[in-house]
Image (cartoon, rainbow, N blue to C red; front, side):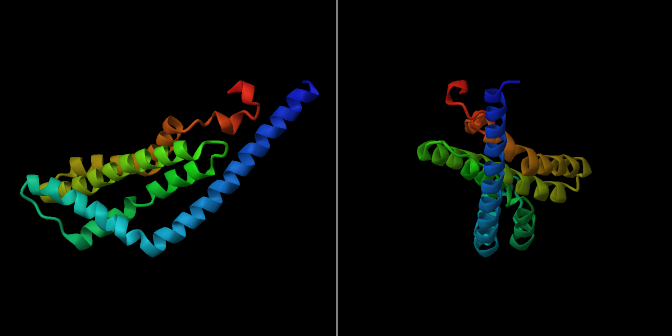
Length: 164
């Protein structure tokens, strides 16, 4: 391996380390914000599920809906932390990705709240199991998938601009 190849690999490692540190810092800041004002987002999810339940003649129980929403309400913070942590990307690109990704996650979270209530009202264990799987997917996989799709993540792995 040439010295140039070693330097590039070291640069890539440093780039990943700085990304990770920025991710941790953004996550902590967004978590603190969530602890202070996350109830607003949780209510938004509950209110978003309300018209879907009304289509099926059901009502939302707000206290229960907020409890359910609390389980899924952190995935936008994870996604936004990833977006914030990526350096070398124009602010406009980051803002666009943040808006689109958060909107998709919010819609998925509203769907989750709706499906939890429907599985309860229908007393349907299969729907409940499917909803739990969806919930896990939305919480752990979807923020990362949206980050990969919406952001130019090659910058994490290649420090040489010509390799982009």
